[in-house]
Image 1 (cartoon, rainbow, N blue to C red):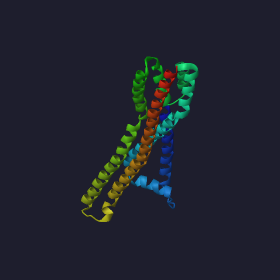
Image 2 (cartoon, helix red, strand yellow):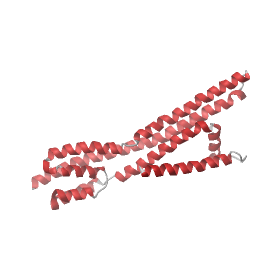
Image 3 (cartoon, one colour):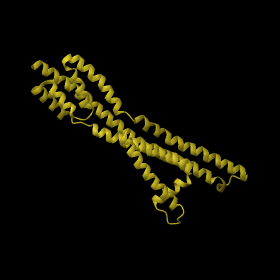
Image 4 (cartoon, rainbow, N blue to C red):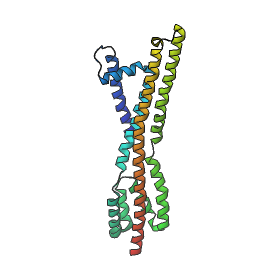
Length: 242
């Protein structure tokens, strides 16, 4: 949680700095670079419509970055861990193996610890404990994905909301002028199109992060399942060799 708050604070400071730069650049009639063009389009899209879209991007990126860091820290070398557990079982029994897993970070080690705690009750209890705790660890890995999914949907929706408002403004201008010339409708149409583009960009960026996180979680879950089967095989082998 502290990690997520720190990321949001950092992104918020960067956004505030960018907002100050936007306000300054908007009054300077200089030749536009790509960066300045983006700033101007942000202003032309309407601050009231573009800021919520930008906030969705900031919050979505904060959650995604926090999840990426957490999932990378949760990655464990399962082959090395299994080798250590097997050596500990051979030399010091269940307690020695539990010491190894307790001193190792990650969901795989946590599942091993739960399984080893049930080892005296038999292999069946070990299997049940691993399956039950595996579901808990999987839920922890997937934590935060629902928020990224929300921002993926909310960003384009806010963009389309700005589109509708822009179209209303265009028709109001037509009604007031009694004319449908391009100059009359250009302002409202510009707001409509820019907010749509902004919302779609937010959705596309966050979708890439979301798919990466889902792929990473699937990989971790597969490792957890394979490692759990290997642990049960080691325990069976250990009990038979005693």
